[in-house]
Length: 138
Image (cartoon, rainbow, N blue to C red; front, side):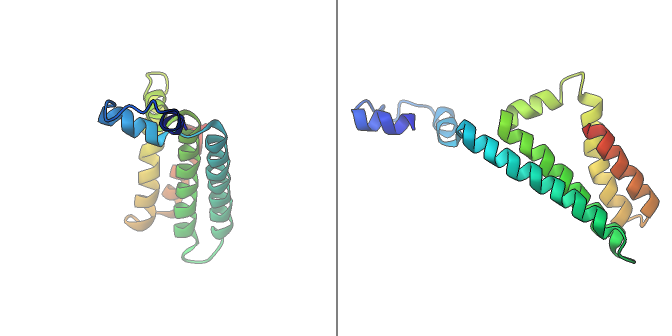
């Protein structure tokens, strides 16, 4: 929006902005857009988690669908907060010393949940990793 104002008022700066400034200028979102996408991602994450829990009771493939949807739900919920504070600030806050252990446990459990279901074929272990995902996210 600022760029449009500069162009219309005749104050456009021709190629004086560096590449980083141009990229940041082009990727900024308004506050209302950030909130909308936060709600969309967070609701999608909750929906995936609930759907995964409902699919848990399907014979034979239920645990695989549960693990996939529950993991996707947690990733969507994590991505939703990136819209509120921005991805770089989100990563910096995730890897602060006070949150480092929870972040590592959560990311590790995301991967281990899928490994337990698809490669190791351990249903109980997958559910334990899903519980650990939930606890680490909280």
